[in-house]
Every structure is written in structure tokens, then in C-alpha cells.
Length: 295
Image 1: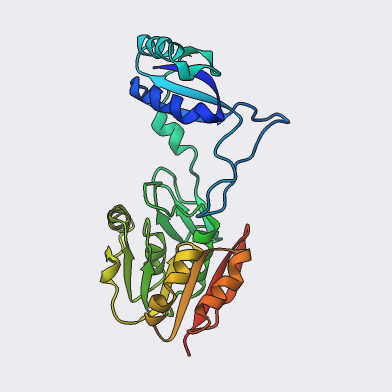
Image 2: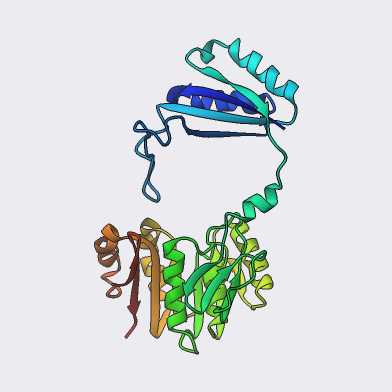
């Protein structure tokens, strides 16, 4: 495998990336050419919002090709294009063979939810202190336990186990991690629903890997009332879903919402005010968990 490295101004990054893919690049990565210097630029965007800038002023593109001849051909074709003016070829070189699977796996370690509750990738042994373990590998669907919103939901589940969870609805199940956690902490029945077919498939596979029984399907699977309704999505859809989610909460049941930034607490409380009184139950790294209980 060979890599071709280029420098591009922000206005040409997309054009050059598209051209590289048309020239049979296996992949194209883009990074800040000024990273680790005083000129480094952060491109952080809030969840659900576009980043403040489209890209770095000076971007370094790395394209991978199967053969050296392909990399050289791509370089020659690009240099002959009018749009390539302002870009620069940094060079090409062979890429050492690596065990890419092992390299990827090394980036994911067990995640602690509580001292006795852990999320552990299948290639790791559970920590000695783990009493409850969710086996979960990174996949296409959201939810690997590394995000604060997921951990806060799982902490809440762990704190209400032992039969108090009752019948559970995981609305927007993603990878199924919250539904699996609820099942492991004694839920009587768990319905896990999502609008995305890939999330439904991922949840089914993850439930099988963790030896728990879930009812999994698209959103219309949810029916009746639930002692626990979980929704780890984002603030905007949570506001839109307020009447639907609250309608599913049984008498004395709990509504548990996540995917909310600290500054969005008042917005959510206002959206749910006609139905219930939301309160902040947990907080981590700028995110909050909000809950309510039906009288």
C-alpha cells in the first residue's frame, strides 16, 4: 500500500478529495497541517449544529492507494488540473504493513459505568471488579458507552435495578446498549425501538451477544405504558417528542432523557412543562441527564 500526501487550502479540500477518490484512492483523510503548533485551529461544533468553520486554513490530505503506480498516476493527473493551483504535493511513500484490526481494537478499552458495572469489547477480558458486564463492539449505530450521555443513562439504570425498572422502553435505541443494560438489571420486559434499520439490526446482534431477550423493532413497536421510558437522543427531537414520550410513561413511572447540554436544560423543562416537571439528575462533561416521575 502507498500513500500520497498533499497540502490544500480549505476552499479546495473537497474538490481534491473527490478527485482522489475518482482516481481509485482507497481512502482520503484530512487533518490540520498546523496541528501541534501555535497556528492550530479547533473545529468543534455542538451536537446537531454545523462546525464554526468548514475546514482548516491549511489542510494535509493523505490518500491511500493499493499500488505505487496508482499514487504516481494520481499525482500526475492532479498536477495537470487547473483547480490544483494553490495545492502542493508533499510526497508519496509505501505504508508499512500493519494488523489494522488489532490497531483499531487497541483504541477501545473497557468503560467503567460504576465500580461493578462495565462495558467491555469482546476482545478484552472483564476487569476483576466487574459484576455486571455489557459486551459491545464499536459499530455503525450510536452507543458504545464512551459518551457521557450513555454513561449517565446506564448509571441511572444501575441505580434503579432490582425490579424497579419494570417494563422498559428504549426509544432511539442505537446500538441497544441502554436496553441491554436495563435487561441485565432486572427489567421485566424491554422494548427497544429506532427509526433506523441499521440500529435495529445492531441492537438484535448485541442483545444476542449479551444473552438478553429484547423486543426490537421500528418505532411503531412501542405500545402501551412503561414503568421506565429512556430516550438518549438530542435536545431538539426530545422537545418534539415530548407528548409522545410522556404518553408512554405509566403511573409512578420514570422518564429519563439524555443527549442534552447543560445550557439546554431550561428549553427542555419548558417543552415538557405541560406534561411533567423535568429535573437534572446527573451531569458530566457539559452534558446532563433529566428525569421526571408520573404521579
